[in-house]
Structures are given as structure tokens and as C-alpha cells.
Image 1 (tube, rainbow, N blue to C red):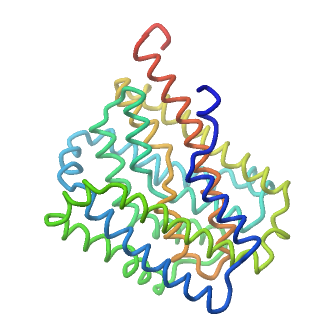
Image 2: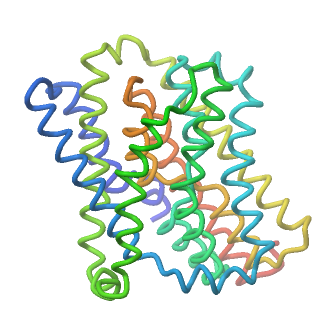
Length: 326
């Protein structure tokens, strides 16, 4: 059992399969157009269902715990981007410019919802606060992430956000999400009772984007531009970011006097980055860049955060049962 927690889950195996498939049989021409259309439909449906699922009441109810939520949002949307820029002299020599751009994009993403809540529950943290914090981060990310991308990409010297990109975000992500929120009163219970459907759309849309993104990147010579040393460098970059944020959120929460239950929420919600939101947003925001290199940092970070936080959650759980371990 101690070994299994370090093994990749089924979804991660499917992601790797899509990368291998795109490397061997990349889609192009008419096939690429069909896959792109399917991907657009899947992304719109994904954000519609997320809008129908996320409870506005839960987020509003959680606003009373404003110090905790501000700290989580600050970690997600302030600390991460600042680290990505401040560590540039250290990180950039380890990866290609496009991979570093992908790392900066990773730093702008919202927190995850499902895994943040699950790890908080395993660790014995404040689950209701985790629901509110993760949900608020996911919803605000639709607005904040594109703005942060414009800022950090401009600081990176790769140009800024265009009005066309903003319009794409609004039409492809925000409009379906708002439509889902409006429809929540009628279909919210149905969506909540059919979680496997949301999981299929969630994972299916990501797999489609990964396949189309890596197909285009392979046709542009991705694997010639990203040799093995650069992949190892990218793993090191992701590990550095994750470890720094985990340490700062954990000990920052303690220093500010939060309870252990709230410290767990801040640690897990403040250190996560959402693959489910990031992959569709990357497709909209970086249409002119090699998407394979943009998506790769968040794919590796996704698996890394699951493995490390699984170990950390069990450690918190043991400390909760035996306070002397604290």
C-alpha cells in the first residue's frame, strides 16, 4: 500500500497514452479540424457542467472565514506568479523558453476543487472551508487567470493579451459557465447526482486537448526541441515551485495563528493548480504558441502534487490522531 500511493493513477496513464499516441500518430489536416471542433464542444460542455455543479450558496456561506480565503487566493494568484518571475534566473536555464512560458502559465492557474477537498478530508482539516476556498478559486480563476497571463507573459517578453484572446475566453469558457450557473436551479441536483458524467466530460476534454496540442507540437518538432535533459530540468522546476509553496503556506498559516484544521485547508488549497481549468485555457490563450510545451509543465505538476500531497495528507492525519507528532 505504501508503494501504490506513489504510482500514477489511471487518468495520468491516459494522459501519457495521449502524448505517446500524438507522437506516433499525430492528427493533421482534416482530422485536426474535426478534433479541434470536438475539443471546442467538450470544453464548452465542461464549463457549463462546472457552472451547474458549483454551489453559490456554499461560496457565500464561506465568505465569513475571509482571512483563510484571502490567504488561499493570495497563494494561488499572487505567490505563485511572483515565484515564477522571481525564480527566473534559477529556472530558465533548466528549460526551453516555451517550457518556461508554460511554467509561468501554470503559476497563474486557479486551485483544484476535487483533490483539494479530498486531501483536506483525509488530513482531518476544515472540509467546509476547503469547499468554499477551492470553489471560489475555480470561479475567480476564469477572470483572474487571463489577466495574470497578460501580465506575466508581457513581463516574460512574449507579448500581451489581445482583445481577441479575451473574447475567446468569454465565449468559450465564461459564457458556458454563467449559463451553467443560471441553469443550476433546474439541473444542479441532476448534475450532482451524475458525477460520473462530469468526470467523463472533465477528463475527456483534457485528453482531447492534450492529443490535439501534442499532435501540433510534434508536427512542429517538439521532441527535437525538448531533449531528455530539459524534461528532467522541468521536473526539477515543478518540484522547486511545489515545495516552496507547500512550505510557505504551511508555516505561514501557523505563523498567522490559524488552527491546524485551517492550516490544512490553506496548505492543500493554496498549493494546488487545476489541470482541468488549465488545459482548456491554454488552448484559448496560447493558440499561436506550441501548446505541447505550454501544457507539459502543468501535466507533470499535476501528478507531482497528487503524489506529494497524498503523503502529506496521511502525515497530517497521523498528527491529528497523535498530537505528540506535531
